[in-house]
Image (tube, rainbow, N blue to C red; front, side, top):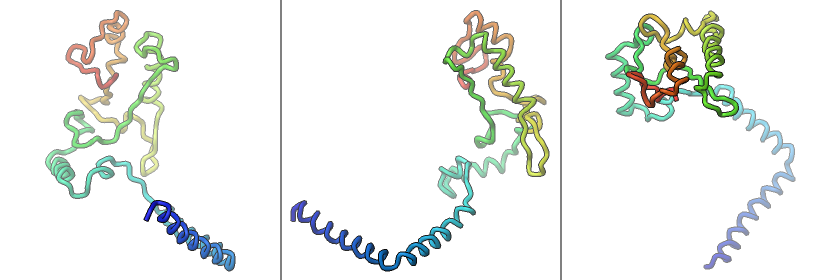
Length: 188
């Protein structure tokens, strides 16, 4: 049995199925139309109750896997101190955080002196103006929810806005991936 024979055999069977379906629809158009609307409406009810999941661990780690059991054991053994003594290397999971990525429109060097004022303005706007509401409709700002280290909010990469960094940048003395004891590879 060649390719052509196989094609003709299955084409005939499929065309008979579509012919029967066409006859059914032409004989009972209103029943098919109303039935389709009812079935789609019933299936659509499930979309109202759909929940989204954004947790990377829940999405991509198999349930009750060894990795998940180890993570749970870490959480039980060590308390979360991000509110008082944040250390990035001590996190048991990714946590909730925000990240700001700044790029010039012309794709110029972001370390150019003319952009520092704008970067500082954006940083100050985030620290003072950005807010959200919690479950009890209380307005919270960055200072209310930040991870803390040595009594103040921890901001990874804040050293980029320091005067010493600007001075090094202006004389092109920035070394990569670290400046002195500080790694800057995560910032650039």
